[in-house]
Amino acid sequence: MPIFSMVVFFILVLVLVVINILQMLSVIIIRPFSLQVFRKFNSYCAHLWWGWCTSTVKILHGIRLEVTGDQLTPEMEKENSIVIMNHQTMADITVLLMYAKDQGRLGDLKWYVKDVLKYVPGIGWGMVFLDCLFIKRNWTDDKDKIQAVFAKVIKYSIPVWIISFLEGTRFTQAKKERSQAYAAKQGVPILNHVLIPRTKGFVATVQGMENHIQAVYDLTIGYVGKTPTLRDWVKGYVKEVHLDIKRFPISTLPKDEKSLSQWALERFQQKDLLLDRFYKAGTFKN
Image 1 (cartoon, helix red, strand yellow):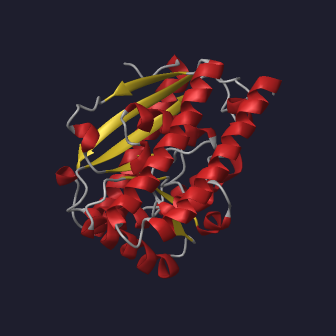
Image 2 (image 1 turned 120 degrees about the horizontal axis):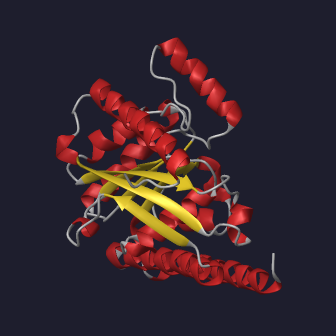
């Protein structure tokens, strides 16, 4: 990593530590007097730091994000949504941050993330202040916590983009083989570029947030050449990323659990076809 990039990286880490301290102070100084101001402050902290990260990468490495598919109108940019996407690498997160920044929604991101992350200083602690959904991937343990977050979001009309990687893990060759074996056993189409989605959390989100959410955004990320690691991204090896957007109004989704689960599975089947075409043509454009 070039010296200048290392300096910038450490500056961003230092800034994140300072932001964590300010967030902790906000619990004492702001929260007792106004929950609304407390949430806006922490949302602004996320918008500020994530925004600096994405802008820095663009400036340092000239990464170009080519967005295709459904374009959000100014009215749509303000809507609450569930965002589902394929997951190949940790660099996927930075792609999403770039897109969210362009839409002015960085501070509204609520992530489904592993429970252990909330104990990690920096990003993990920051997510705690954003009311992110920390899960153990055990529905019995997670259900009450998830519903409590939903209730809070609805009660206080909190603007959200709820981010969910339905595959539950990053795509690898070994996981692909296990997913394909499971698909064959279940008698569903075998996928080559994504894993069979885990739909229970998605169904709970749609049903629990139906009156607060206006749309589901289905994002598909495509990388030119090999799938980059986060290290590749930070070192500037990635110059071009493709992102396809499909928007589905919440009113068009089915209502019952079985049909919602099938809808999510069909979206990943379509995503697999889309990626197959991308890897052959180098673009999501028709």
